[in-house]
Length: 297
Image (cartoon, rainbow, N blue to C red):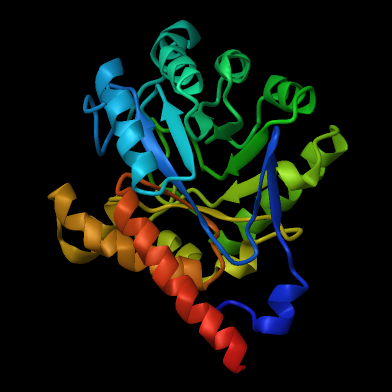
Protein backbone atom coordinates (compact mmCIF):
# COMPACT_ATOMS: atom_id res chain seq x y z
CA UNK A 1 0.00 0.00 0.00
CA UNK A 2 1.36 3.41 -0.98
CA UNK A 3 1.71 5.80 1.94
CA UNK A 4 1.32 9.52 1.40
CA UNK A 5 2.96 12.33 3.34
CA UNK A 6 1.90 12.92 6.97
CA UNK A 7 -0.75 15.47 7.81
CA UNK A 8 -0.07 18.99 9.00
CA UNK A 9 0.39 18.26 12.70
CA UNK A 10 2.68 15.30 12.04
CA UNK A 11 4.78 17.30 9.56
CA UNK A 12 5.26 20.14 12.05
CA UNK A 13 6.69 17.64 14.56
CA UNK A 14 9.01 15.86 12.09
CA UNK A 15 11.49 18.53 10.99
CA UNK A 16 14.28 16.91 8.98
CA UNK A 17 17.64 18.67 8.68
CA UNK A 18 20.45 17.49 6.41
CA UNK A 19 23.89 19.04 6.99
CA UNK A 20 26.94 19.15 4.72
CA UNK A 21 29.80 21.21 6.05
CA UNK A 22 28.64 24.81 6.40
CA UNK A 23 25.47 24.02 4.45
CA UNK A 24 22.19 22.69 5.73
CA UNK A 25 18.73 22.07 4.33
CA UNK A 26 15.35 21.73 5.98
CA UNK A 27 13.74 18.77 4.22
CA UNK A 28 10.49 18.81 6.15
CA UNK A 29 8.46 20.16 3.21
CA UNK A 30 10.73 21.07 0.27
CA UNK A 31 12.63 18.35 -1.59
CA UNK A 32 16.10 18.88 -3.05
CA UNK A 33 17.20 18.31 -6.63
CA UNK A 34 20.65 16.79 -7.20
CA UNK A 35 21.81 17.30 -10.78
CA UNK A 36 23.95 14.57 -12.36
CA UNK A 37 27.28 15.66 -13.86
CA UNK A 38 28.89 12.50 -15.23
CA UNK A 39 32.48 13.19 -16.29
CA UNK A 40 32.83 9.80 -17.95
CA UNK A 41 33.01 8.46 -21.50
CA UNK A 42 30.75 5.47 -20.82
CA UNK A 43 27.88 6.27 -18.43
CA UNK A 44 24.62 4.47 -19.17
CA UNK A 45 22.52 7.57 -19.77
CA UNK A 46 24.88 10.36 -20.84
CA UNK A 47 28.30 8.81 -21.43
CA UNK A 48 30.70 11.32 -22.99
CA UNK A 49 28.25 14.20 -23.00
CA UNK A 50 30.02 16.12 -20.22
CA UNK A 51 33.48 14.56 -20.58
CA UNK A 52 35.02 17.86 -21.71
CA UNK A 53 35.55 20.41 -18.89
CA UNK A 54 34.01 23.26 -20.87
CA UNK A 55 30.90 21.19 -21.60
CA UNK A 56 30.66 20.09 -17.98
CA UNK A 57 30.78 23.66 -16.67
CA UNK A 58 28.19 24.78 -19.22
CA UNK A 59 25.91 21.96 -18.11
CA UNK A 60 26.45 22.92 -14.46
CA UNK A 61 25.46 26.52 -15.13
CA UNK A 62 22.34 25.36 -16.94
CA UNK A 63 21.40 23.04 -14.08
CA UNK A 64 21.79 25.86 -11.57
CA UNK A 65 19.66 28.18 -13.69
CA UNK A 66 17.02 25.46 -13.82
CA UNK A 67 16.91 25.16 -10.02
CA UNK A 68 19.38 22.43 -8.99
CA UNK A 69 20.28 22.50 -5.30
CA UNK A 70 23.29 20.15 -5.58
CA UNK A 71 25.68 19.25 -8.41
CA UNK A 72 26.74 15.58 -8.22
CA UNK A 73 30.07 15.06 -9.99
CA UNK A 74 30.97 11.49 -10.96
CA UNK A 75 34.07 10.19 -12.73
CA UNK A 76 33.36 6.46 -12.87
CA UNK A 77 30.50 4.74 -14.66
CA UNK A 78 28.24 2.62 -12.44
CA UNK A 79 26.07 1.20 -15.23
CA UNK A 80 25.38 -2.55 -15.03
CA UNK A 81 28.44 -4.52 -16.14
CA UNK A 82 30.85 -1.58 -15.92
CA UNK A 83 34.42 -2.15 -14.75
CA UNK A 84 36.10 -0.13 -12.01
CA UNK A 85 38.81 2.42 -12.79
CA UNK A 86 41.77 3.51 -10.66
CA UNK A 87 41.70 6.34 -8.16
CA UNK A 88 44.16 8.45 -10.17
CA UNK A 89 42.04 8.22 -13.32
CA UNK A 90 38.90 9.09 -11.39
CA UNK A 91 40.56 12.07 -9.69
CA UNK A 92 41.87 13.35 -13.02
CA UNK A 93 38.25 13.53 -14.18
CA UNK A 94 36.44 14.97 -11.17
CA UNK A 95 38.94 17.28 -9.45
CA UNK A 96 39.27 19.87 -12.26
CA UNK A 97 35.48 20.10 -12.39
CA UNK A 98 35.06 20.48 -8.63
CA UNK A 99 37.83 23.09 -8.39
CA UNK A 100 36.32 25.14 -11.20
CA UNK A 101 32.82 24.93 -9.73
CA UNK A 102 34.17 26.08 -6.36
CA UNK A 103 36.17 28.88 -7.99
CA UNK A 104 33.03 30.09 -9.71
CA UNK A 105 31.06 29.97 -6.48
CA UNK A 106 28.54 27.44 -7.76
CA UNK A 107 25.98 25.37 -5.83
CA UNK A 108 26.60 22.67 -3.26
CA UNK A 109 28.84 19.99 -4.74
CA UNK A 110 28.63 16.24 -4.25
CA UNK A 111 31.18 13.70 -5.41
CA UNK A 112 29.86 10.34 -6.58
CA UNK A 113 32.61 7.92 -5.53
CA UNK A 114 33.27 4.85 -3.40
CA UNK A 115 37.04 5.42 -3.19
CA UNK A 116 38.38 7.08 -0.02
CA UNK A 117 41.32 8.69 -1.86
CA UNK A 118 39.00 10.29 -4.41
CA UNK A 119 36.57 11.41 -1.72
CA UNK A 120 39.36 12.97 0.36
CA UNK A 121 40.76 14.87 -2.62
CA UNK A 122 37.28 16.04 -3.62
CA UNK A 123 36.54 17.35 -0.12
CA UNK A 124 39.89 19.14 -0.08
CA UNK A 125 39.00 20.68 -3.44
CA UNK A 126 35.75 22.03 -1.98
CA UNK A 127 33.07 19.33 -2.31
CA UNK A 128 30.42 19.23 0.41
CA UNK A 129 28.92 15.73 0.08
CA UNK A 130 30.18 12.17 -0.47
CA UNK A 131 27.69 10.08 -2.46
CA UNK A 132 28.90 6.49 -2.02
CA UNK A 133 27.13 3.73 -3.96
CA UNK A 134 28.93 1.11 -1.86
CA UNK A 135 27.29 2.39 1.32
CA UNK A 136 30.54 3.34 3.08
CA UNK A 137 31.53 -0.32 3.42
CA UNK A 138 35.20 0.68 3.23
CA UNK A 139 36.45 1.47 6.77
CA UNK A 140 38.73 4.14 5.33
CA UNK A 141 35.70 5.98 3.96
CA UNK A 142 34.09 5.89 7.39
CA UNK A 143 37.28 7.26 8.97
CA UNK A 144 37.40 10.03 6.39
CA UNK A 145 33.79 11.03 7.00
CA UNK A 146 34.30 10.91 10.77
CA UNK A 147 37.25 13.31 10.44
CA UNK A 148 35.27 15.85 8.39
CA UNK A 149 31.82 17.43 8.48
CA UNK A 150 30.70 16.50 4.97
CA UNK A 151 27.22 15.33 4.07
CA UNK A 152 26.90 11.62 3.29
CA UNK A 153 24.66 9.57 1.00
CA UNK A 154 24.66 5.86 1.87
CA UNK A 155 23.35 3.70 -0.98
CA UNK A 156 22.26 0.08 -0.93
CA UNK A 157 23.64 -2.17 -3.64
CA UNK A 158 23.75 -5.95 -3.89
CA UNK A 159 27.06 -6.90 -5.49
CA UNK A 160 29.12 -4.47 -7.59
CA UNK A 161 28.28 -2.59 -10.80
CA UNK A 162 29.92 -5.42 -12.76
CA UNK A 163 27.88 -8.18 -11.06
CA UNK A 164 24.82 -6.50 -9.53
CA UNK A 165 22.27 -7.49 -12.18
CA UNK A 166 23.26 -11.16 -12.30
CA UNK A 167 20.17 -12.71 -10.68
CA UNK A 168 19.81 -10.50 -7.57
CA UNK A 169 17.79 -12.26 -4.86
CA UNK A 170 16.08 -11.16 -1.63
CA UNK A 171 13.64 -12.83 0.72
CA UNK A 172 12.08 -9.40 1.33
CA UNK A 173 13.83 -6.52 -0.43
CA UNK A 174 12.20 -3.76 1.64
CA UNK A 175 13.09 -5.41 4.96
CA UNK A 176 16.63 -6.15 3.85
CA UNK A 177 17.26 -2.62 2.62
CA UNK A 178 15.87 -1.29 5.91
CA UNK A 179 18.13 -3.61 7.91
CA UNK A 180 21.14 -2.44 5.88
CA UNK A 181 20.26 1.21 6.55
CA UNK A 182 19.83 0.54 10.27
CA UNK A 183 23.19 -1.21 10.46
CA UNK A 184 24.92 1.55 8.52
CA UNK A 185 23.33 4.28 10.65
CA UNK A 186 24.49 2.65 13.89
CA UNK A 187 27.98 1.95 12.51
CA UNK A 188 28.42 5.50 11.24
CA UNK A 189 27.08 7.26 14.32
CA UNK A 190 29.18 5.03 16.60
CA UNK A 191 32.20 6.11 14.52
CA UNK A 192 31.45 9.72 15.44
CA UNK A 193 29.45 10.85 12.39
CA UNK A 194 26.50 12.99 13.44
CA UNK A 195 23.14 11.65 12.31
CA UNK A 196 22.07 14.94 10.69
CA UNK A 197 24.77 14.45 8.03
CA UNK A 198 23.38 11.11 6.80
CA UNK A 199 20.94 10.42 3.95
CA UNK A 200 20.03 7.04 2.45
CA UNK A 201 19.49 5.82 -1.11
CA UNK A 202 17.71 2.47 -1.75
CA UNK A 203 19.71 2.02 -4.96
CA UNK A 204 16.96 1.62 -7.52
CA UNK A 205 18.40 -0.57 -10.30
CA UNK A 206 21.50 -1.52 -8.31
CA UNK A 207 21.24 -5.25 -7.72
CA UNK A 208 17.44 -5.34 -8.02
CA UNK A 209 14.95 -6.90 -10.39
CA UNK A 210 11.91 -5.04 -11.67
CA UNK A 211 9.74 -6.43 -8.87
CA UNK A 212 12.35 -5.41 -6.27
CA UNK A 213 12.43 -1.87 -7.66
CA UNK A 214 8.63 -1.57 -7.67
CA UNK A 215 8.43 -2.70 -4.05
CA UNK A 216 10.98 -0.06 -3.02
CA UNK A 217 9.21 2.66 -4.99
CA UNK A 218 5.85 1.98 -3.35
CA UNK A 219 7.06 1.60 0.26
CA UNK A 220 9.45 4.48 0.87
CA UNK A 221 8.46 5.10 4.48
CA UNK A 222 8.88 1.40 5.32
CA UNK A 223 12.67 1.60 4.93
CA UNK A 224 13.26 5.12 6.16
CA UNK A 225 15.28 4.78 9.37
CA UNK A 226 15.87 7.06 12.35
CA UNK A 227 14.09 9.93 10.59
CA UNK A 228 16.84 10.37 7.99
CA UNK A 229 16.01 11.54 4.44
CA UNK A 230 15.70 9.24 1.45
CA UNK A 231 17.38 10.02 -1.88
CA UNK A 232 15.87 8.65 -5.08
CA UNK A 233 17.87 8.09 -8.27
CA UNK A 234 15.19 7.37 -10.86
CA UNK A 235 16.37 9.29 -13.89
CA UNK A 236 15.92 7.28 -17.13
CA UNK A 237 16.31 3.99 -15.26
CA UNK A 238 16.01 0.64 -17.00
CA UNK A 239 12.92 -0.24 -14.98
CA UNK A 240 11.06 2.34 -17.08
CA UNK A 241 12.18 0.66 -20.27
CA UNK A 242 11.24 -2.74 -18.87
CA UNK A 243 7.75 -1.60 -17.89
CA UNK A 244 6.96 0.43 -21.00
CA UNK A 245 9.08 -1.29 -23.63
CA UNK A 246 11.02 1.94 -24.23
CA UNK A 247 14.68 1.73 -25.25
CA UNK A 248 15.02 5.38 -26.33
CA UNK A 249 16.34 7.19 -23.25
CA UNK A 250 14.65 10.47 -24.25
CA UNK A 251 11.29 8.71 -24.00
CA UNK A 252 11.99 7.82 -20.37
CA UNK A 253 11.88 11.44 -19.20
CA UNK A 254 8.11 11.76 -18.75
CA UNK A 255 7.93 8.46 -16.84
CA UNK A 256 10.80 9.69 -14.67
CA UNK A 257 8.69 12.70 -13.72
CA UNK A 258 5.78 10.41 -12.86
CA UNK A 259 7.96 8.27 -10.59
CA UNK A 260 9.41 11.40 -9.00
CA UNK A 261 5.91 12.65 -8.17
CA UNK A 262 5.00 9.25 -6.73
CA UNK A 263 8.07 8.91 -4.53
CA UNK A 264 7.91 12.54 -3.36
CA UNK A 265 4.33 11.98 -2.23
CA UNK A 266 5.62 8.90 -0.35
CA UNK A 267 8.30 10.92 1.44
CA UNK A 268 11.49 10.86 -0.67
CA UNK A 269 13.09 14.29 -0.20
CA UNK A 270 16.23 14.24 -2.39
CA UNK A 271 15.98 13.49 -6.12
CA UNK A 272 19.02 12.80 -8.33
CA UNK A 273 18.33 13.53 -12.00
CA UNK A 274 19.55 14.39 -15.49
CA UNK A 275 16.49 16.59 -16.25
CA UNK A 276 16.56 19.38 -13.70
CA UNK A 277 13.92 21.86 -14.84
CA UNK A 278 11.23 19.22 -15.28
CA UNK A 279 11.95 17.55 -11.94
CA UNK A 280 11.99 20.89 -10.09
CA UNK A 281 8.59 21.72 -11.55
CA UNK A 282 7.26 18.25 -10.73
CA UNK A 283 8.38 18.50 -7.11
CA UNK A 284 7.04 22.01 -6.57
CA UNK A 285 3.67 21.00 -8.02
CA UNK A 286 3.41 17.91 -5.81
CA UNK A 287 4.44 19.93 -2.76
CA UNK A 288 1.79 22.56 -3.47
CA UNK A 289 -0.87 19.86 -3.47
CA UNK A 290 0.53 18.18 -0.35
CA UNK A 291 0.60 21.52 1.46
CA UNK A 292 -3.04 22.11 0.59
CA UNK A 293 -3.90 18.64 1.87
CA UNK A 294 -2.12 19.44 5.14
CA UNK A 295 -4.23 22.55 5.63
CA UNK A 296 -7.49 20.76 4.86
CA UNK A 297 -6.95 17.66 7.02
